[in-house]
Image 1: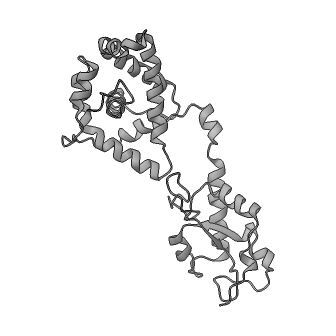
Image 2: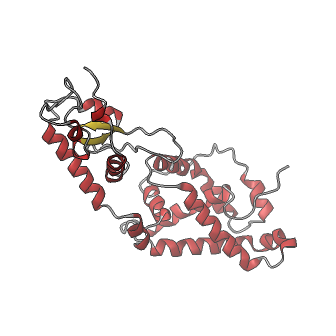
Image 3: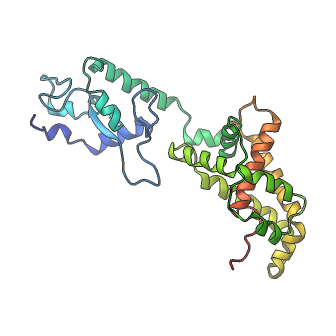
Length: 275
């Protein structure tokens, strides 16, 4: 089979249109492969011809011109696995692939835009709480993080038992963070940095002189921790994407897990000096 180069010379507009309307996802039904991720330079999308680019290819149409073969309407973005699977011309006819592409694009276009999500006040905090509430939370006492040093450095008293207990769920939370970041559903750092900004704002109420900052924090550590929690509850209360059938107790536990993880990640209260 001789490669038809012209049929594969896609215009920049065609490529942009394909990626924009794909929603960064494979068009194959129920495929959750994400084409481009922030931490990965490789782009795994494959531009596939519905009617083949050259003679001998799947679903080749001799009546098409090369311009028609490379046109947006004859192309579909698939992941490598489903590119191979759709080579089955009996199962995946021209009509089936066009319908697949059309349904996928309609699904993407029906989803709220980033602006609409912002306007509707959907938050990463509520998203993570939703996921945690579906998990079977099992304590993991094997964490190697020396939490006592940070607790002592900040002089936490009332919240010490809470932190010591909920640190056991850090592994589960971080596994969820990683899983949903890979799927492109969450950016953990946005959530943690937002918690950090809330802490800094609360901290500013108590710290009046930078020369004795840590002493002010040590005197008010429990109150600072509590105020951060109250601010996070305000975000939860306004979040439109929090599942309405989640019991209060489950939300409370999930928030504690998130806060303790943020504490361990030095987003709440201060990090001890390195020795």
